[in-house]
Image (tube, rainbow, N blue to C red; front, top):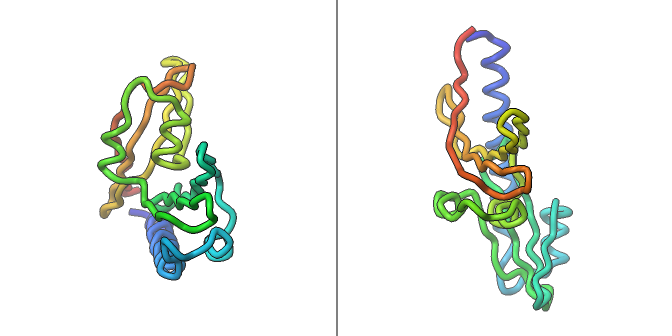
Length: 164
């Protein structure tokens, strides 16, 4: 393995650890049932996306992709109080993705993908989320969409970090 490639892998792993440590510190300061939406924004920053439900509940997206293997959804009630903190990149959520779902439904469930790639010959867009990193290998969960933004299937893949 070349020094440059090894350094890139090591830096990627180090960044993931730093993000995880920062998130753990920030999230430990938030208390569902008592922390306010303002406190959430002060500690976590601006969410990348906000969904507003009919009852006024807001769901804020805090992705840690493409480097991390977590995405957070923080649920703020209509009273501006934090209700729930969810790490959404889980095997249970991956199993819930089904053909026929819209890209909006998938984004609400899993958060921002690490990558989006369009394959013109297949006429499909594929979103992926990093799921685990092992020595020499990074695993991804993939969702395949047709041109209408509807899920056609899911798959898993890996990228090996070979020598060179």
